[in-house]
Image 1 (cartoon, rainbow, N blue to C red):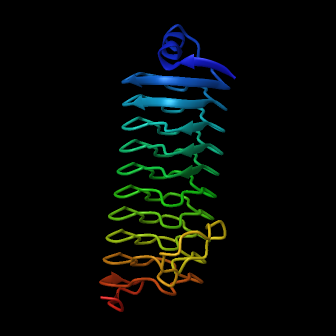
Image 2 (image 1 turned 90 degrees about the vertical axis):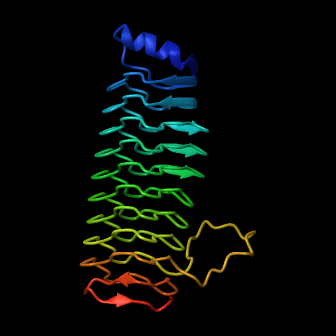
Image 3 (image 1 turned 180 degrees about the horizontal axis):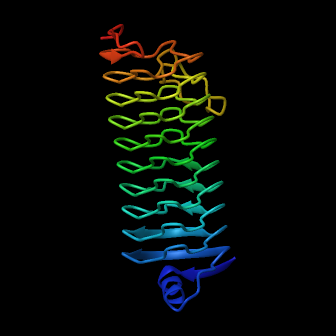
Length: 241
């Protein structure tokens, strides 16, 4: 894998080159225009901040301590990518393809993911507070312990998603499809056995959550925290207040 500093990547892009697949990228760059760039299969140890990467191909991309904060990533292809301790804070990922993406100890706080494809993603313990996931596809997503406080999840598709022990306090799930989703106690098969302090009998936190007109057919709510929770029929549940 060829190593390349991101500053050199930008110089080559400005010169007219857009194909940079399978590179090892290092360094930081801010405010760059890299629309439609092909970085398929590349690896990043560095930072893209306030950059325009809209329409870029980042499929099979890997990042370790990588940063894409406040970037325009609308329509980007991040399918089957893998990230560790990386962040996409306050970025625009609307209409992006994140199918099969895996991220450990990552953050997407305040990010726009409306109409994005997040089916089959693995985002355990991800910080996704105040994100916009309206109309997004999260079917079969693995998102245990995820923090979605205050997020817009209206009309999102969570079919068969794992949201065990997720925090959804103050989230808007109106019109969302949660059929066969796990919002109950922990049932994640990949959990390590070295975390004895967790109370696995407690499910997702749905305090102040809006579930109006949501589809809960077959959903597991066993152990879920219901407090000032608006249910699909408009009633309010205060089981755990």
